[in-house]
Image (tube, rainbow, N blue to C red; front, side, top):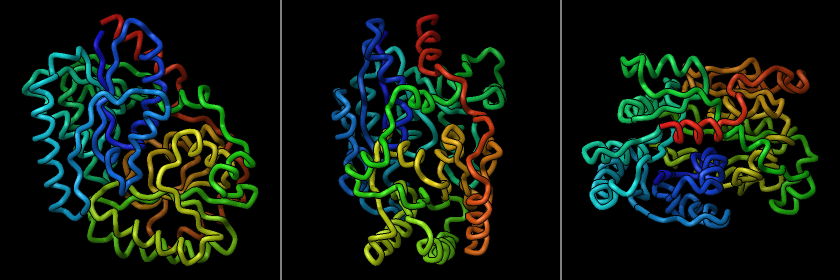
Amino acid sequence: MRVAILTSSRADYGIYKPLIKALYADDFFQTAIIAFGTHLSSYHGHTVDAIEQDGYKVDYRIASMLLTDDDASISTAMGLTTIRFADFWQAHAKDFDVVFCLGDRYEMCTAVVAGLSFGVKFAHLHGGETTLGAIDNVFRHTITMASHLHFVATDVFAERVFTLLDNRDANVTVTGALSLDNLSGIPLLSKSAFNDKWHIDLDKPSILITIHPETVGAQQNKSHLQEVLGALEVLSSSYQLVITMPNADTNGSVFRNAFQALGQNNPEKIKLIENFGTQSYFSCMQHASMLLGNTSSGIIEAASFNKYVINLGDRQKGRLTGSNVMHVPFSKAAMLEAVEQASGKGPYEGENIYFKGGAAERIIQTLKQL
């Protein structure tokens, strides 16, 4: 079977890794990797290099990102991605039996939509979920509607996909969250090894922070940022703050530039990371005191590391969350109160509602049955 992987960012590649490893290990599959989006942007760390460092060939590279991130630039990038992929699918649509796509990014959505008229059979990962505070919610459901196969994390999301498609016979498989397969396949770094690699001492009380702009009600991002900066200034007196940089979302540079200035002013207490990679990101999560931000990794993965998560604002609103997730508004006072509460709880001891185990193998077996 001829399979392709559409990967547009560090985030989706980290999720894909167990599946890519399983596909390459199985002679039943001929696997190609199609890299685009921020993977090819030096501004975002040129993370396509991480794919090759893992030993995989990047078969195709499709550049379509702009350096600016205002509303018009995002729309222009979507149009350019559509045009570039129209040319790509015209040349290569018949080369693949199945093309994997993941999540809800605008560049992923436009790459998929461009393939519809060419009859590309897409397999969508993480459909059926909801993030009401991001326009990505529209993109995710669009990808679902455009896809032939659906691999979802929970039964709840399977039901939503059936509803969206208005088809109870749709090819929907509940796999659990694929990224959690990484927990058994990637050895985590010790605190000393992590310090050797990143010069970040996780023996110090640390908070792992990932904050993206909200793309619904984006006009509020500047006021959100001021609340965040106020909270981080206070927290830096008691915690080391490890900040991973924002995605290429609308007005993402508002947060990015402010975090860079913050890090330059207090390099001993505030550490900025463009791209940890999966092993180091999970290692940091393992050793950190808690997570703060509005990223899906806090929703999906943190519970497996027994961590509490302070989820900010509405970006993840509507998403199924476990009891380790504390929802707070973009308010300095609310953030500080939540950190204090989380610090007094000790390790989280509940379940991870996204964990099923063996997600990659379920996907492989479904493909073979088809």
